Image (cartoon, rainbow, N blue to C red):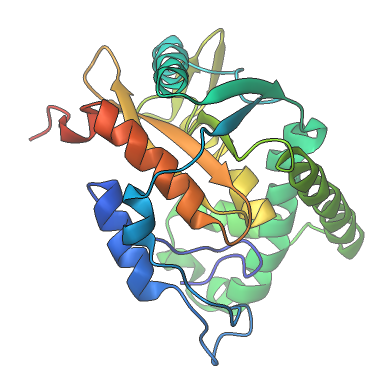
Amino acid sequence: TPLCWSMDHVGPMTRTVEDCALVLQAIAGHDPKDPTSKDRPIPNYMELLTESAPPLRIGVPQEHVWAPLSEPVRFAVKKALQTLTDLGASVVEVSIPLLTESVEVSTTIMGAEAIASNGAFLEEHGSELDPRVKERLELGKATSATDYIQAQKVRATLVQQTKDVLQSVDILAFPTCSIAAPQKGVTEINAGDARIPVLHALTRLTRFSNLTGYPAISLPCGLSHDGLPIGLQMVGRPFEEETILHAAYDYQKATEWHLRRPPIG
């Protein structure tokens, strides 16, 4: 179901990095019926996984990423970054100033585009929607053209800032979510010293890749005290999925988090 045409993205959900590379190989490439797809050669992702590569330069943004953040997530991601260092990568702090605006900007863009795509459905079938979905669509009605254009201008600058940073590092790495996977039905949760809505905690750090369109991967890097999964996010340059796949594969080989299963059932 379309929500936000300029930020909607699809990608594989798999148990291992190898499986992710296999599925990506099948779905990547130009589609003449999709005006947003590019006609360019597709690398052999599986072959590139096992090829030797120079040591990675990994940038860790300092804005927006580390607060609010639960302590188990902070600990797990810091440990993951140390593991990558032990594998030969150099990990450095980087600055992307407008990263702090990513949630507000993406919310504005999403609101306007969501109501444009789903306005008719809201009018005709609004009573059938989940109340939370309906509320968010209703908020899109209040987004003005000026708000939308201003948000797109900030977005363009954020993309450029990210492009500039990725000239000095190969990938960015930071938490996937501010919290470990939450219990079903929880609406608010503690993230460090802050208490925030669960939806905000789960999406505030992934909005960045939706806005920039840069490729990203999330892989398991730890478990909370309750045995619930924690993710490490890696973001790369446009059309360089093989770089983040290679980094994720190297991390996966050095750890066993992808073999662990949360106590569900």
